[in-house]
Image (cartoon, rainbow, N blue to C red; front, side, top):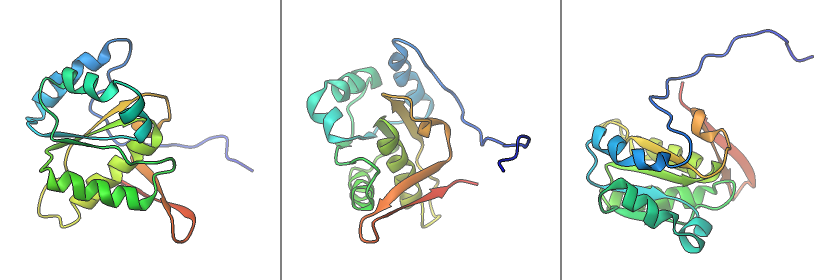
Length: 157
């Protein structure tokens, strides 16, 4: 039986901008973070079949350090590792996820991967969701282990 009473504590999320035209706030958010090299993590559909990446870059008010567009559905681990290597090579100072749950979860895991040595603070993550997945509101992330053919995940506690 599922309990009908309980408690759940959310980890803090600094700000949520929503509504038509809210992407215009991206420049201000990147300025607050001191970003000069924002890096976008997204999927192929958004990167190749829409103008969202160029619109995001215009809203950012600065050139992107790069765009990784190989995140597939259910965030396969290979794509996440490749995104982490690409973001590190680009010397990204902020990661921007653009898309639904898979790019958002993938970016959360990339942040973890890039700060795994604990010598540097985790990179800030700005989520720009294109659909409601709830990934943008949680501190957990899922990915697919392609070898074992199962989903696994991480969470911030």
